[in-house]
Amino acid sequence: MFSGMLFIFAPLVVGYLIPISRAALLEKINQSTSYLIYVILLLMGLSLAALDNLSSNLQSIL
Image (cartoon, rainbow, N blue to C red; front, side, top):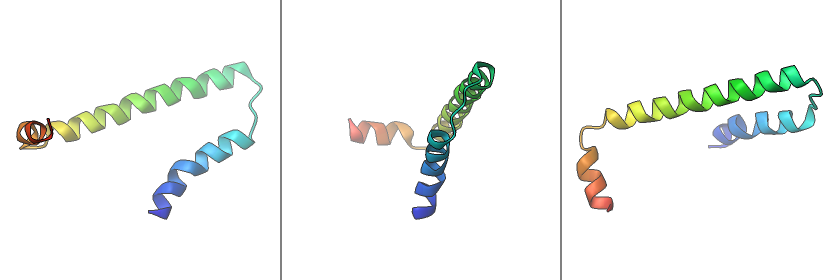
């Protein structure tokens, strides 16, 4: 569990401590972050689509 939290918070701390003043580099970082979020959402959607009993689980939740 600690390694997972470290995996999440280490880039956050590093990004806070290293200032970026070049606008082109900052734009490239923002664009790549957006692409990574789309990839993560795609993978989450694929893993949900692979569940066999998704509809019955959703009905029990709602």
